[in-house]
Length: 87
Image 1: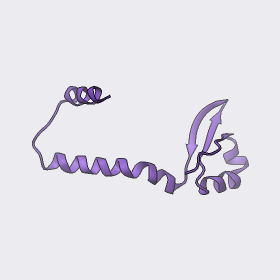
Image 2: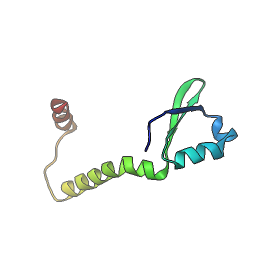
Image 3: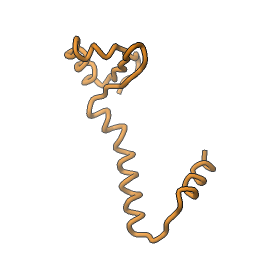
C-alpha cells in the first residue's frame, strides 16, 4: 500500500469518477473520501485490507484456541488493568 501522496476526494467522486477511483485503489493507493468537508471513509483494495486485518484475525484465532483449551478466565477489569499497565 502506497501513502506517498494522499488522495482526498469528495464522496461524490464515487458516482462521478468511479473508474478513476477504482483504478487508483487497485494500484494499492487508498482513497480518502470526504462528505461536507469532513473525512468519512477510506477505500482500500481487498488485498490491502487483508494485509491490514490478517494479523488481527490470526491473533483472535489464537486467543480463541487458548481460551478453548484452558479453564482460566479473567474479568474485564483484570484484562483492562493489564492492558493499561502495558501502555
